[in-house]
Image 1 (cartoon, rainbow, N blue to C red):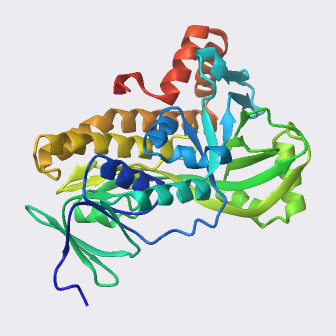
Image 2 (image 1 turned 90 degrees about the vertical axis):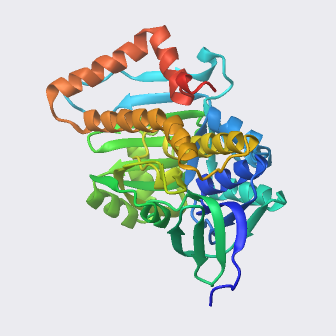
Image 3 (image 1 turned 180 degrees about the vertical axis):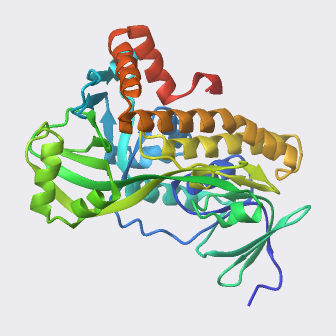
Amino acid sequence: MTDSAPHIHQAAVVGGGPAGLAAAIALAQAGVDIALIARRSPYADNRTTALLGGSVDFLQSLDVWQRCSSDAAALRTMRLVDDTRRLIRSPEVKFSSDEIGMEAFGYNIENRLLMVAMEARAAELQNLVRVDDEVESVVTGESSIEITTKQGQSFSVALVVGADGRHSLCREAAGIGVKRRDLGQSALTLNVAHTRPHGNCSTEFHTESGPCVFVPLPGDRSSIVWVVKPDEAARLKSLDDAALALAAERQSHSILGKLTIAPGRHVFPLGIENPDHLAAKRIALVGEAAHVLPPIGAQGLNMGLRDAADLAETVRDTLLMGADPGDDAVLQRYARARRADVFSRTFAVDMANRTLLSDFLPAQSLRAAGMHVLNTIGPIRRLAMREGLSPSWRGR
């Protein structure tokens, strides 16, 4: 049964993944009275995220990074290797963070450890109410949005942040359509221990079916994201530990020595999803409700954290002016702030994936030429590194 009187807050975040938690914390720190409505995720899997440049700065500003930085591995070198065995191959390209005056491009951390730090910070904020429940319905109105949970709690808010993933109930409530494209690829994710040190170098092997990247973790460990055809992903996942370790070692050309598979392996299909709008009817979308990309260039969660940062800044400025945070003009300011970043990153990742998979010789030539330019022309390489971490046009 629904509560007789709804809980009144300025805003609510629906969805408790990393992007949702970051948005809730950032909004609370901006002075918003906010409810975070989502089941607490056990995060039992061992998937990882490579947090790049600005994402680490943002998490520091939320008093989150200080709590988990010791569990992360620095990414000081990024190496791209053409392993396609095609007629036209790209040269190997190596990016070093010290070339642009940085200690590291970013840090790789297990999602579950990042979530523990985020939940701990959220629990400290007096104006952030954590509701361990699932949302049943979201009903938009002229001056407020009514949220009902599956356990019967009700909330009335001026702004809803839809951080509820690919099948977003919030996006549906806002009447926002989405364009989806299946890429015909799947990603196998797993962690390994190895006998040779990684040297804080992330190595990405480009194959005919997609990239396979080995990303450093603390100690002599790495996380693997291996993009292949769906049937091959299923086959690899079904292997026993010894056979999978041998397959991964062969794919890595033994650069990390003998591998040992850690518990937990996961397969998920890849696609690209683009909503028609990023905000409407008092609902702003963040994270995978706002964009879905394949795991190329570590853009997914990093974009979600930029969503949270830009939304919190927009709402903070709105409250300072005494205005309604859910007003359409406010939502459109947020959408404009995010549009170029989302479009450019989606386009770049899509093109990188298409040219890698293409058997069309001109496409292979274009890819090889681009990699050659990055490898040999220092100013362009350094520009690419800086833009990959934090777009200059964002003004941050």
